[in-house]
Length: 80
Image 1 (tube, helix red, strand yellow):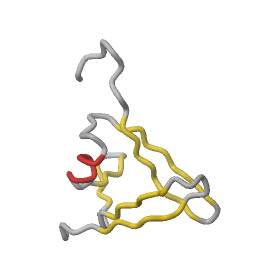
Image 2: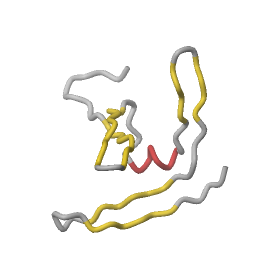
Image 3: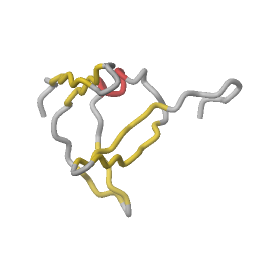
């Protein structure tokens, strides 16, 4: 695996630029009845080092991708 990554800027329709950071190809491993994909530490650091992520499958026309969004802790919620 290489440590380099690329950043692509795309213009969104609402005039806010979309920044895409490519962390390269990742292997998909089997663990019991689940599939595991390892993330680069830099990817999580760019999200603020969350302990939990919301995972969504996004379909836009012919394009399909997985969206990871950090889950912020609610006030009073303890670290798990």
